[in-house]
Image 1 (cartoon, rainbow, N blue to C red):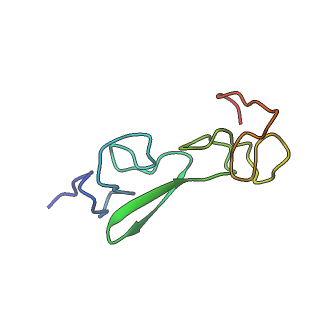
Image 2 (image 1 turned 135 degrees about the horizontal axis):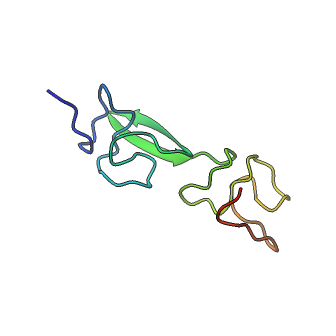
Length: 91
């Protein structure tokens, strides 16, 4: 039996399987972990979260400057700090 991407069961050749075939949520439509995310499985179903501090703006991050320090324009939780603005194409 071949693995079925999107069925919610992470097996064999799948890096993740979050129960859907939607790109942009951490686990791609081809069941590969997307850049800027970390995924783990519980009971076969993958849960993915963005990695704040990796210099990739993903998920709910409004900025990601490659560190987890506040007071530099991008907070330790990857939110743009007051009185700063971040380009969507740069960390």
